[in-house]
Image 1 (cartoon, rainbow, N blue to C red):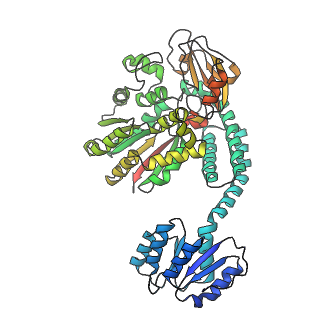
Image 2: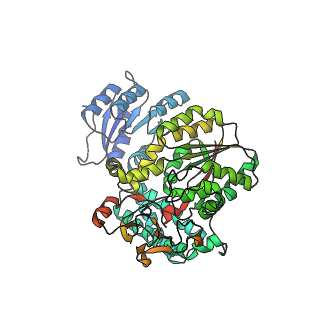
Image 3: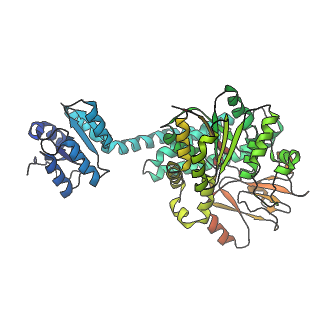
Length: 526
């Protein structure tokens, strides 16, 4: 066998180095062995393959120009058997065609001869130890920022500061997803819970003033988003697709952002707020109407479907948007599309070219909302989305294979701008709050409206007069209550069954950072 003696038989990282001039590389191999690596050598592609089949390796260094089976041919065979095994191609040639072929074959690195030992060491660290190094750096970074975030949460944050806090927590949440440190994940989870406790009090204190105009500052709430953020863009004589992905949380946007950025540049990323209830019937109708729900009911009763009414509660979005466009003096022609299932998404993709003559296309895509509800109703989804990390991962997996992504790529080819946003988010609930209502009380787990509601007033945001926050009332004694933090409403009858069924599901309608702070993103084709 053509191997150099190993100094230590307990090496954790095993390297295969294939080169027909391997004897000339003995100093490099000794250098690596002194660093603690176990190195196996091969003088040809065939010998390298024999050793790959007979043993397991963590990384392979492969000479591109070997007699017999070439480096590229050896690479192809290795990847067909072990696609995840890192292979570093080493070559004397700087020809672009060879580089392209090697890169296209999914190599992990590309080095030009002559290589020095430190180049090899750097390549090993980059390919094998990067996750460990990144994990250590991430953990250290969050530990350093933990105290600062906690101070910001406790220091009576204003609107801008809440946005900054939420962005930071989402950033660290996604970074810690890449590590295996469950302890720090739990610490961040508790910090996020603390933030939601303080944020709930912030909303309860200010929400009425935001709507009445008495507040010194107010967020961009659902009913003013179109007028303030979208209408000005339509004056630039550019074509836009407004894509509203129902129930898309800010962290879900961040998880699909890298995929979208292969085609589009993010030119603006803002956070807007959902109104209460953070539910489609209210927040999305408000966005399209440019009015609060009670104002819609008063001005356009034919377009408002109440809690007790039959029918789909968002069936008049086109009509509401048309009325808003007239009211703000916009004569921009637009198409409206709503996608409720896979078939509808594919059908729109096939006919999309027919709609590009309009300056504005509005696309409502309901998948994420269906996913959150399915998370409650389908055992297989419960298994796939057992926690926040899995929920984000499932969102990314769906998006990467969805008609929506195909639509975005089609729009990229046509160089059409995209506005991406949502109507509300959702939160994983775990703490039951008891409530009693009559048979006409709505079924949502994060808000209730009806008469004679019974509850602990300290556990909810109660609004006895719905008109105070511009919500419709079904009768004179109707009131609203909203769940806080990660709470959900449960009836005393069959309480334990109800709690066990809905605990750890993703719900919306109440007050939390996840439900209220929403992405608003402007994308330009690259």
